[in-house]
Length: 314
Image (cartoon, rainbow, N blue to C red; front, side, top):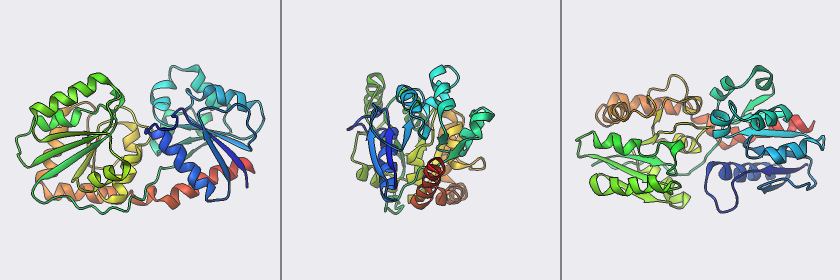
């Protein structure tokens, strides 16, 4: 078995998607017998292959490791795919140096040049939450699970809720205010919209509990590499309402019925209202998500990741 090194720009104690992905992949690869180390950067440690998350922010490690002649895997995690690649020579150079490129959902392939696409593989993120979908019967509860930062457009759901008069509607928001201004706005919404609760950061298990007790998850992101919370919702059975951006479409599929135009709280309010008031539409959301559920099984991620590593090592 091989010695593998995973570079992630998210350090210990952080709770963002890059860190979760790095730690989960380390667990999956160790289960196959590999020795795996996770760190912020590669500084010459002995290893048989490097997996670098984020093409721009891990660029220095990627360049250093490329000189070793050993296998290099670069993973595009979101902001590097949809924000950095067009403008960052470093991000583009990272992909050129890679033996394999990994993306987290199928629509990402459309953003890559043909020469990069040929060496790119899709590895969907997985989840096994061990929670059943059991939403309350007396209210219709929506959840937003995202740190408060601009890329997530995190307050779009409460703006949509405020347009609706249905007293049965509830919205819970989970996530740390990484942007102080957005934190202040969330607190202001809490005082003027009684159906909205911002819970801040919660342990992962409690977050999953809220997700299981919600009728829908709202993913309002401006850009996504492949939101793991969508995988968690799919495995639990909680339908998703999502902004129509490439990262969400790549996770949920082009035919999924629960999209709304990006940054359009009026349109989002209409989809929320339909989900709460139309049984047929709500069933369509559940059925559409069920069709994608197997993509996010741990066995599927483990197999896809192992195939990438086996490929570059041999």
